[in-house]
Length: 110
Image 1 (tube, one colour):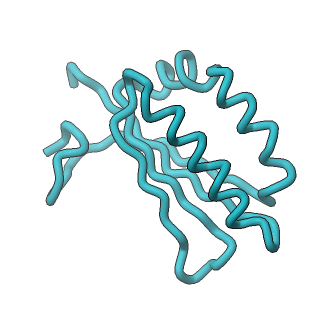
Image 2: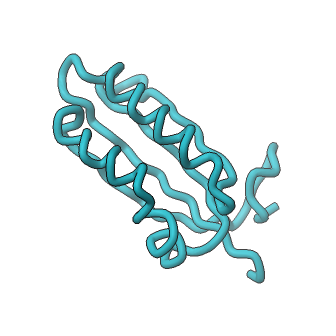
């Protein structure tokens, strides 16, 4: 693929009573990262079966390696990472590469 894209599917388990405070921190992060050149989109969802869980689904131009080299070290991410210990219990990250898409044109996999 000449124009690679990478997607991050990140699940957060908020500490009891901290979900809305975490949501505000996450929203602030998204506002910052959405101005990045490689940023395509982000969707934040609540898990209907796990009330303390939030999931963010991000799509970026590039590869996992380019994202880690160029995006992860941004100063605003360091500030955000510093707040997580007070707000979440756990975080799991899945790295995805789009291979097909129907109903939208977020990726270049259609």
